Image (cartoon, rainbow, N blue to C red; front, side, top):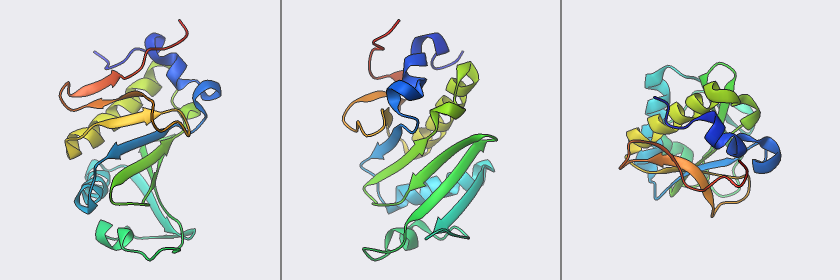
Length: 161
């Protein structure tokens, strides 16, 4: 049984309403949590690409990535949990794990199931909630992984039916 059904959440997967790149985050994290995500990416066999200042290279330990000096080049960890679906992690702070997904790649029930599986994998590994908000609307999550329920749940009611 899927965590969420397309007909119930399609509004939250509409790039015109949510922005093409909604924000996904895990609050209250640490360097160890970032390392757990790096380890999860490797252990799941997901395709990934790490780059610093646009230069692709090996994925260093989280402690190294997060100790870069202020003003250092931008760092991205691009992860493809399935072919054709990209999540871009931004390592700006140890306090929050922050990444974007592209809703145009997550349409229909298959897209919902892919996103739910990805959020569950991260949330379960960290034992923490994972929340998705519309692009730039950080305070109003619409769905996310709930560790107590051990699944992805709606955190807002769709406006359209």
